[in-house]
Structure formats: structure tokens, C-alpha cells
Length: 468
Image (tube, rainbow, N blue to C red; front, side, top):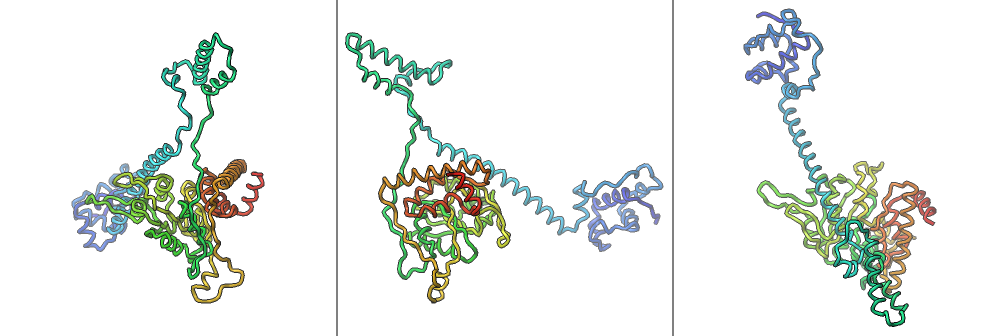
């Protein structure tokens, strides 16, 4: 058998032709080869000849001009890599590519769905606060070259002229003219303001009930339809507290752990066309306390599907839009404030600011009094005890508290912008804060939960100083 000589370029070309031949699998097994990289010069000559390949075409002495230059990187040709890899690695590579393509499609679908939801949310929240223009003006189509102010002025002038003509033989009534001006002149935008009215409830420590010292705060917030994010170390009793809330409100309890896809919240339609529901879907549609456990370990893109469902009265599911049940309540449990991994909790992800903005944050530290009670031992000295929460029933007092809180939130928002602090202070802070103040929370607790949400003491000090 004639032995031919190859360089790197001709050897790669011959390997490529051999591995693409129909007899390659048989030769690979016969010669006990793992992949094409084990094809030596001797084997290239032998197997090429056995396959009927003209191996002389790849000889660098017989055809020197054909094999000049450098060898192309193997990664330029996906098929070469596939041919040279073991079968199990090829299968693994194909699975990886399919997974990446599927994730890309999911991200694209999620982005499109999020855009639709944000648009719907914007339409729900931004109602037109302007009053309708008076009847006689609305009956006249506005000319393209007239502004709104010009139309209003024209309408007012016509009304004045008619009034003066009707009283030509009488003394001019100045009060009537002023009344007419006030009636037909432009008015400031008006917005319907619904002052939160505290429910008739009382949340307090009950004898015999083993509860975390912050449990009354959690229960009162959930009762008042405020979404709560419990932030505390592992084993501090966050899940147990959520179950206790459901039990005291006589609602079903359900939960899900960290998610990497929005479908784990919304569900999906399987290959047979059957709708696969989730715990979140059942709670959202039928009512109940839903715990989003380990939310800060979820992929941020996956949790975005949770946003519209919490902010609006409806949510998008695979089979259509579902209206939120009146008894649906949401609690999230985290080991961090959603700002990313820490030294202790390295598996946590930074969450989207829009997701975090949906929750009032309640710090859930270890409760040594509760720990001692579970084991049947007396409580440690100076251990914190559950607070007694009494709602504010005086609507005027609630309104005054709300006004003062609103001004403070807006000042902090301006301070955040001026000092370029990476923090969101949205109108939800005003709304949730008013609810919690009316429910009986202290002003300090409301500031911590609705406004500062895990900011360090130095940053809070700077913001409060700037807001004065």
C-alpha cells in the first residue's frame, strides 16, 4: 500500500472526507476510534484506500499548490466538530443548542407579553382627569387653527355677549357676570381621590398562639391588600408565617419556589392542548394566600410576569385574561432585598426594580422568644413581643396622615433623583404607606417598609437630610 504525506491542511481535508463517508461508522468501530482526531497518517492512508478515496489528491508532494496556506480553525465548520466528537457529546451539543433556542424564544415571548401588559397597565392607571368641556363648546367642532384656550375664550365671550344682550334694558348684574365667567372659563384638572378607609378590625397578640413578633404587621398588611415581601435569614419562619396568615384569614394556602421561566407562574398548554395550571393560577383565579418563596433566587425576566398580575385586576394566562379574585393575597419570601447575591446567599439574583416596587418590605429576623417557645423554654429577657395593631377609624385623621405622608414621599423622591441613588420611589409608596398607616402601623415602620426598603443607614440619612 502506497503511503502518502500530508500537511495540517490536507490532513484535515482528508479527515473531513473520511468522516463524511457512509462507511466511517464501521471503520470507527473496527479500529476502536473514539473520534476523527485519532486518525493517524497510517490510518488515513489505509481507511481512505479501503473507502475508495483517491488519497493521492491530498499528498503535499504530488499536489503542492493545492495544499498551501494555513489550516482553518476547526470551529469554522460545525459539521467537522460534530464528526470528531463522540456520539454522546454530539447529542449533548444538540440538546444545548435546542435549549438555547427555546430560551431565546421564551425571552422574546416574555418581552412581547411584558410590553402588552405594561401598555394595558398604563391604560388602566392613567385615566383622563380633565372635565368635559361645556355642552355648547363640545357641540362645535374645533377648528384646526384654534387652540383649546382660544376655543374656551371664544365660548366665554359668546356667553357674555348673550347675557349682556338679554339685560340691555336692565342694570348690569356684576355678580351674575362673575358667576358666568366662573362657569365657562377653563378649570384645573380634577382627579377622583379615594381616601382609604380602614376596615373594622383588630390584630393583636392572642394567648396560646405562637407567632413571630412581626406577625401582626404582616397580618394587618395582607388584610388590607398590601403585597408584602418578607426579607430574612434562612429558617426565620417566613413560610410558617404565610401559612398562619392563610389560616387566620380562612383562605387556602399555596406557594411556589424560585422560577427560571414565566411558565412556572402562568402555566402552559401541553402538546395535547391541555392547560397545565399552577399554584399561582389557582390562587389568583379562586382566591387564597399565595407565597412566592425564594423569589430573589428566581431569574428576573421570569418574575416580570408577576408584575402586571399584582398591579392590575387581571393577568394574562395561556388561555386568556383572568380576573383577579377578591380574596387573592400575595406574599414573597427572600433572603436578600433583591439587590443580588451576598456572601451568605450566593445563589441570589438582582431583581427588576419594577418587581420590587410591587411589595412593601417587612424585615423578618430571628425571633428568640419564638424559638424558646417552640422548645418549651421561657422567653429571653428583653426579647421583642408581638405588637398590638389598632386601625385608625377616624377618616379625617386618616386623610391628614395621608396628606403628610404624600408630601414626605415626594420629597424623598426628589432627594433620590438629586443624589442619584439607585432606588425607586413610585406612587405605590404613597398608596401602600397610606393603607398601612390607616391599618395602625407606626410611621417609622411604614417608612422602612414602603420607602427605604433595605437601603443602608448612611444613604437613608443623606436622603432624609436632603428632604428637609
